[in-house]
Length: 250
Ligand SMILES: C[S@@+](CC[C@H](N)C(=O)[O-])C[C@H]1O[C@@H](n2cnc3c(N)ncnc32)[C@H](O)[C@@H]1O
Image (cartoon, rainbow, N blue to C red; front, side, top):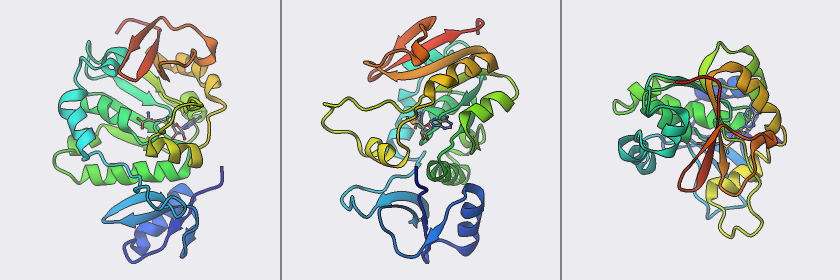
């Protein structure tokens, strides 16, 4: 996937621009064309000149949806909490090896887990880092943000070099159903910017090696098992299924 550049502008300080470039290997540009990252109202955003009507994509843990899940929806009865085991023990360590925009990681951290967010795509990792920076400075979110740590590297590298964790969480990209009419805006962007995760099957075995308690794989309801391997159990959510591969009781 070609890398997404960073737009130089008055809103982006020279120091922050340099930091993002160094940390995520981003190139900077002065004229956008296609997908690009830029600073808008204090937040790093992803947008495209070819999709002018589509709003900017950003990691916003203070957004209505994230706050709602933090306060209500991400409760211990939610499918993801049951699948990960947070309904039984709240202080689990979780490695989210395919962090994306960090929404699942945020729910898990809101419930008490300490989460390492692994993301290999430089643009997505930069969005995550910026979202975590803003959350750390927000008194309502700083406690949760302190339980979230970003690692910009391939999942395989994290899975084979990390200290053991209780749970590995995997949510690789899955090809959208051909007939699904309205792919959500983030999904569209992700399919353009990130592409498909053709190596997803290879993550299951190292995840099972690292996880002391269990591996949880998030799949669309219609999708088959990761690596064609049957899970120990599955927890059905509203739009997704969580396949759980148990190593030991929580
Ligand atoms: C479907 S998204 C995850 C969405 C996430 N669960 C959320 O709540 O926002 C998948 C993400 O995993 C990342 N990814 C996929 N395979 C990866 C790998 N092998 N190493 C690191 N990141 C990976 C992709 O770049 C993409 O950002």
